[in-house]
Length: 377
Image (tube, rainbow, N blue to C red; front, top):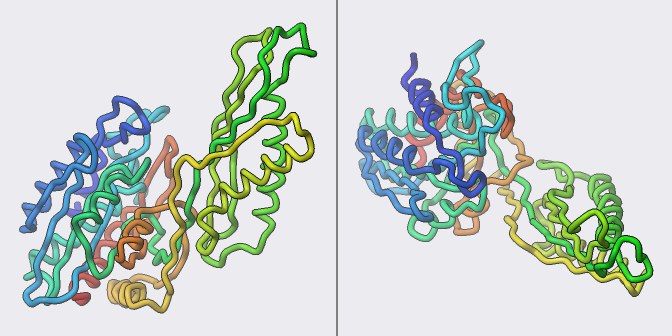
């Protein structure tokens, strides 16, 4: 078995479910220690830094033979939960696919980048510059790991090894979480003249959001990442069967595009509330921004995707450029002045009960990263 695939099996076998998503879950401590040991065995200088309480990042440095630029390989160590999965941490290979939680998202990419830097280290290191390998926590929730990373480390360029089916990812969507609240008046269910139903009023908001979503998806799509969209995520309200609800809350997500204003999602939500209030002065509602991350895009002519494309070609792969529908830590790196692209193996089952990564893709990803690391500095 190729050492990169053996490493991938070891990574998948470690429970690293994000505790911010699943209270009480294992988190990243065990996998971080494993990766730190792997880096040290490859000859890297290693530091572990907590991004949050007991949730460490691991950073390894491989110095080149002469001074030069720094190339970062970055991947996240956490996964989503495993509800409904029979054997999430028992990696199994069938028909060229390796199954298990995190196999595609994104332990396949982690294995490829760790195996790549180990190969380069074993062949004298990069000719110039240095390789910085970052395994970060919490990408699946708030990206505390990437936020902590850029406070202490920088690079001239970064490859984030998220799953891209071996395409060079030069853009991805962002997201915003918006909370909308409608107010009513509590009353006995038999006294409609005294009550105001906050849930029915929230229904007006939902109807307006559905119309907005259709309009967003009818617009000309972004050439890399497609159309913007929104969806209702969580609805809550009411107290009991025979009472008018005095409050209802909707938590919604808006997926954003490169080039859209940072305030687009909140502006749209507030406009809906204002329109409903204008149509019915008794309507009481509000919208607030809870959390968000920006979309990201890098020019295809930038030096980084050009160099990565050449490296993929030398490794025997087909050079393709694409965008990602999901958000990644690349946006945080770029905001800190580190140009970034996405590049990782293909597979299927992101966040589903059957997740797998293509074994051959992991190996080609590793080989392309070796080629890039050898020549970037």
